[in-house]
Length: 498
Image (spheres, rainbow, N blue to C red):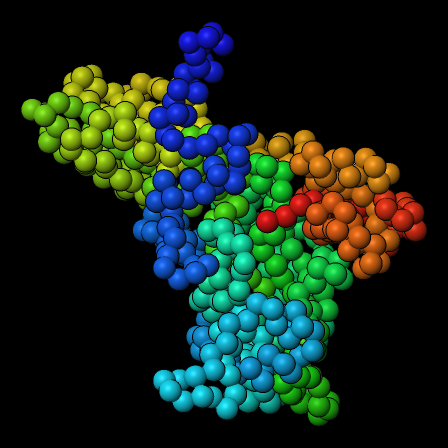
């Protein structure tokens, strides 16, 4: 690169400066916070620790909700709505549950001027209140399975907040099911984990590792917790979804029992599972670059932005032509917007929509109209193409699919390159410090796991399942820290996390 910023790199640096976004390599945290605000995803709110999700971010969340909700219903699940407030006594009924959530609880102790005899808790999760209601609904094995879920907000106190990733109020669905047998409940847990994996891979272009959490990392009150883990562009892990087998723990606490075929009384086997608005953070941090967001096409609020290019005397005409072009694309089921803003430079519009990560930009000017062509630019490329209008329209869906595949391959290659094996503790520590995931054997002892976390700030992300897409191979070996025999018959993934 020349001293005056010449060449391709110089042009990219100059372009990045126009956006006013800190490069990822300089400060990933600042980059993230700036992109969230400047791309109009979310803003700070007057409520400490909570965010306001702006229309563009809300449209993204609505697309996520729509896809998942359709899939839940297709597998026989029914939605319901529970109160935000839960009696404190419910939370304390399951010992591990209250211990796990006590530091995060918001409580309501007064209504108006009247002190409550028993405080309410702002919903941190709903296993308890749902268990209470199930106890009144369940009588016989004929009533099962209960396949329920709800969308809503949950509340967990956060000392250090970060939009979408860690806020005191966040958004999610929570699935809750009850079954007659352990086998059925565990099949449900796996079904939902695999659904999340499919959603991340095929819709969000996110490669994730399916695995079981170690005992130390389980959900409070669960018998087994499974997760999907994704790697962000700074090498940190993000737990992107969870599915829990709760055994009969909550059923016993809330008396959720039924008459079996043999006329015996049995407690139901229950599950819970969730993906939250943290998944938006995963989209941002997996696909973004120094110029802002890169929206996965299949979930993007705007898949194609049409920018009419013209002078004052013909701008209105070009807007009309842009709307015609947009209508042709919408007829294919695509989400398209026309940027009609007047008095704003074309360069500003280009930068603005690239910052927002819109997968494809189409420029249409008077000369293009006369020649029967349009100019097309993919968000993941510096190059523009001039194409016959009909060809650009007919090929748009395939173009969006190609961008999805490019994003998935890029993210997968990055994850594989930044995941290393370590068999001695010195190498383990250095690899973590370098911002990698580390695959290592572990003894399974909670004290040893805690010592690793204290020493390196890395946690056990999960133990990949036998049929996981990544890192599933079986292998014996001694614990990377203490040298005792490994407990899992395969390597555990360790990494720093969000």
